[in-house]
Image 1 (cartoon, rainbow, N blue to C red):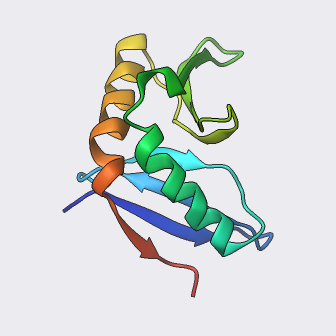
Image 2 (cartoon, rainbow, N blue to C red):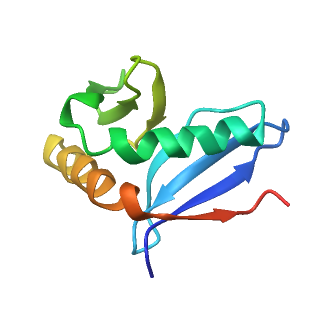
Length: 111
């Protein structure tokens, strides 16, 4: 199985996408978009930004769990990771996004 972006519609009618690794695990979830074209633009932004280490903002939740936020060139968030149990897990997630996002296909599940 290859990496893919699953483009979806939320219950409130907004669009979002999940980047899934070849093993099917979600490694990045996007922000919400009001239009499908904006969500597709978000995917187009993830591809180049995922290969730039400085675009990953490493954070901790209020419970102390590490996670990351991928930001666009303008500093706006594009997507965020799951919560990890360790900083090394978070770093593996960042590497996976960088390796998989540029060539991931889009699976449009909105229709």
